[in-house]
Image (cartoon, rainbow, N blue to C red; front, side, top):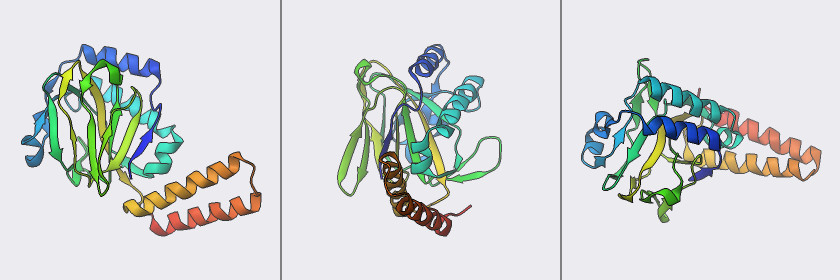
Length: 226
């Protein structure tokens, strides 16, 4: 399930983040690459745990907590602290699958990566290339969103970032351990929640909507793992 979530960050938040990132010290992206990623990762990133990474990460996390579509689609139990990367001319991240488990920095806790996320920070017309290509049973899906928009996709997906040929691509990436680990179950819950919200907006029969809401929560109660 690939879900695009618009306007996670406001234009002002995007401008503030990009201004700070333009002046930031970048390190080689290989610093956090596993064995698989080290073979294909060619980008730069903010050092995890740096003051700027923590400050910008807190902005992203606060925005996620307020975004109903993110909550509905991800059903987050825990979110990995957002990381920030930069791709310029010739930089790329070849085809890979994200590690199944990540150690949350400074905590000793392990997070299961159910969902991968890319939050775009630069407008798509400001750089060429840099598309995120996500593969599923229907083929490869090219994603290049407006600044401030987010895409969620299964961490089991084979994916890559195409080489940038002009300009710079800034983004934040992170992972979500969901309360509902199974992708198919999350997809059904998202569809049901979306339908309930639409019924509420149209003033549909309250008793029927209440019954569907009960079904949603009873399914969630059955499938949730906390």
